[in-house]
Length: 536
Image (cartoon, rainbow, N blue to C red; front, side, top):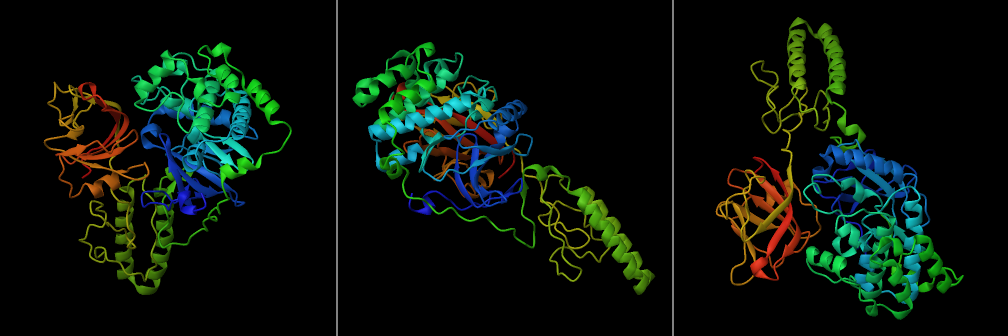
């Protein structure tokens, strides 16, 4: 964590520069719910901004639940939680802001330094349990407590993303039977689809702490379906854990939720063994040295205003545009009085023509800059009345003052949240909801003599590498000259993103949720598919 580039990634071209007035300074990461960015309050305090993925934002049920959860989360005040300070469930897309925690996630710390000591695990469990007390007091069940949702600040852990998993429950992602949560850290009742309660979070707390003590999940790795089976049908092997911790883990990992310890009991158990000492030096070693947070981004004065996301993004641009036209008309008339009737006639035609063009603009596009009257323009000659300046079909249609109109709207993604591919199932990009007969679909999954792969007669594939969060623009650019009709899956894992281009010009992004290829006879691939029509 000493290298700032390990934490803060530069913004990409597809990233917004502003979210509801928060100027973004860097990327912090991405997950199933969306991308996370670093920003600052007006007073300069760092905050983490999470922008919800479009596939979720398009679901009205998600927005309703998201709004309810953020209202509850605003009331959570705990020493070991990351406070929610701002959010908007009705924005396009929805977003939320929490105080930024300067420290690695538990997953990152274990990957870098290995398993934690018994003392550090006790501090971790006490902090997480105290966070759950504050969360549960507001009627919220976390549902997705795991190492990546626990941040290690210098003075103890911070639990983040509480209540967010519930907002996604019941959306198109889960309506077809896909369970919310991370398999390796689920409780038996959550894995089997039974009632989820505060005791579910206690089970996840113990699994998260076991990961910290062992350096790996207590129930092992592998495809999610196999991990869930072990959680539901087998007892945890407590002999793997340090002996002083086993009694507490036995209570927290009880199969019956009613028999599990409460968060208050976990705090008391840990505090008795830690004594009255302050945060031990071993904890500060785990959290690592402090990293310099990038400073706030100053308000720019660009030639073209930057695109916005959030509350102001939905305002129709036609209103300020018409106010601008009224101001131009006044100036034009003054110039006409000084210059003669011919100039007035020409300018009147230009104002009327620009008004017509303004009404045809994409009301969701970003506003653009207004050049001065002496600015040069590479657009069509607006001095010729025969030139149709209201045509927005080209890449740089201009209005009456050489102003660039909004670009044509990008196609919206069509989400297909649960796609299953195996030896018998295939998929057609044209209509993924209709299952083709046998292997007649355009996209097929096969396991020949060595390894498994995706294959197609007409579509091409390309696997994305690096951080998650593939976009239409990224897939479009990388697929431009792609010719591979097969994609070996040896290097793919859960979370891998694959760009696909169909013969009709459709572009798709397939995100693997479960890859099971260890036994070729029963191998399968499951994931979420987003399709942009005629986008190549």
